[in-house]
Length: 89
Image (cartoon, rainbow, N blue to C red; front, side, top):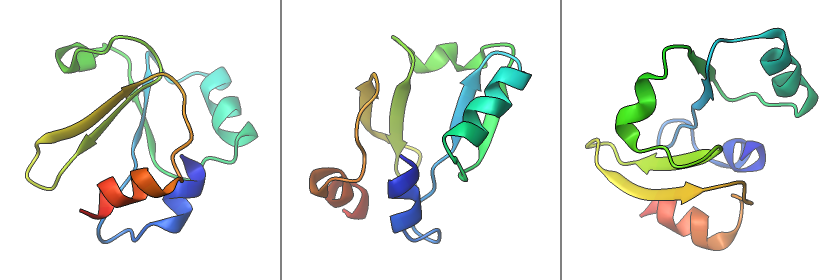
């Protein structure tokens, strides 16, 4: 996801990581260890339950109109051509 973040236009696409639970030292160390530079926010009261989170990590793509256009369960590679096409369309 970091590679995808580095390859996309910030004016057209944004990645926001959401850490489930309170922001801890371990979360900060994870972000630093993996060189994450996109914004990461904390969800200490798990208000994301309304998003039907099935597992962690869970990924959602939301278009500028606020419509969910893609969701994925589990870790994956994000900087491949099919994902880039989905983002640019």
